[in-house]
Length: 179
Ligand SMILES: [Zn+2]
Ligand SMILES: [Zn+2]
Image 1 (tube, rainbow, N blue to C red):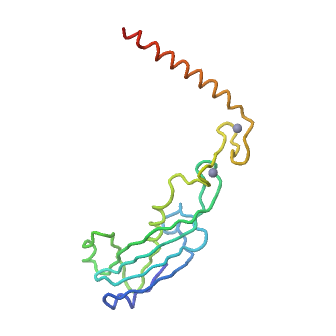
Image 2 (tube, rainbow, N blue to C red; image 1 turned 60 degrees about the vertical axis):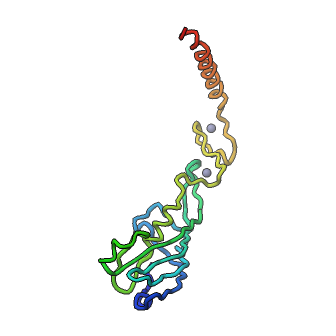
Image 3 (tube, rainbow, N blue to C red; image 1 turned 90 degrees about the horizontal axis):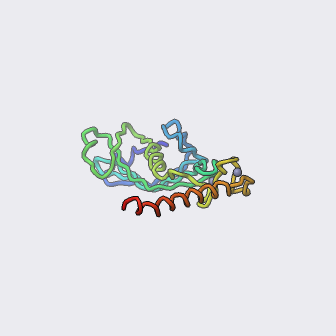
């Protein structure tokens, strides 16, 4: 996702609007977890703030994800704010504390790595197809969102209540032991 910075880098304090939508192979950039459906979008601007070119705006991408509970595939649009700095002057690399500064050469900057990194930070740790996803039955594997399965989960409940009764017994006996 290349932007041409020939003009903006040659004029102090100039800026250029950007409105991009491009197919990006996230895996080729080292982000295989970002399964993009459709183009990566960026709306913002690039600014000459010598010795940096600053990139500001918003990235959006539609991702194909796998639900952490029911394993269904679903799509989710993620957005992220972008604030990046680029420089073609090696001596400027360590002078900016506010942003991580990336180096560029020539007249073009590939902004895809910054956009993908920002999207990755928005990726949920436990993606859910919907907030109340019921998940899969641990016994038969049925998708409990479709219909309740026929497994007899009462067995587990009974065993659990017996265990609870046992624990309560033990707790009520403890004071006697201490005496
Ligand atoms: Zn789900
Ligand atoms: Zn089941």
